[in-house]
Length: 87
Image (cartoon, rainbow, N blue to C red; front, side):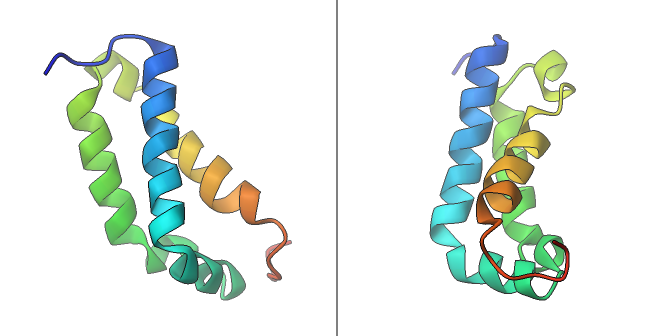
C-alpha cells in the first residue's frame, strides 16, 4: 500500500484514528478527563493508533504532528462538557 503523501489525507487519517479511539474507549476517556490522567489511562491505545498512523503516512507528514493534534481535538476538546479540575 502506498504511503499517504498529502496534508489533507494525513489529517483525515489522523482524525479517523482519533475518532475510533474516542468511539471505542469512551468510558476510559471520561474517567481519564474526570481524574486528570487521560493520557495515562489510554496511553496504550494512543500509541497503537500512532504506530498505525506512522505506518501509513510519509515521514515528512508524520513530522507535522497531525496525529497529536487530532488526539487533542477529538479526545480532549470535544469532551469539554465533562466535569474536570482541568477546566
